[in-house]
Image (cartoon, rainbow, N blue to C red; front, side):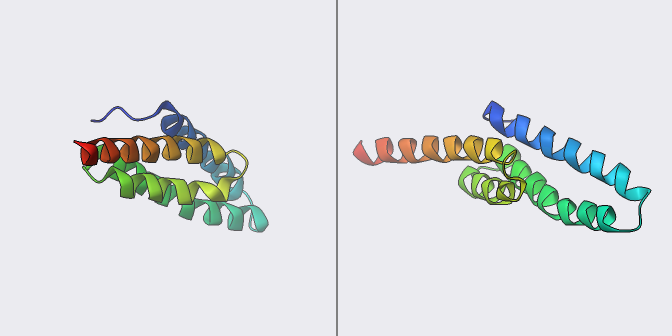
Length: 102
């Protein structure tokens, strides 16, 4: 497993807790809360896919982009994930620039 930016872990944890809280509340309700829980499930699932791509494959750029774009749904809390993914993308760009200069 790769060591990722701490903001990625924090953002994923916050998103999952948010989904859990809304999901528990939505299971008791038939209306708007249930719709909100289903609506939030989609970007959290995409967040998890982006996290798995970051963690378990060599294509970190794709994983960071997937995680970043799915975090935009959770503004303002999602900005933590956007910041973490942006740092990973900046590190990838720095590495590619230094490799081109060699």
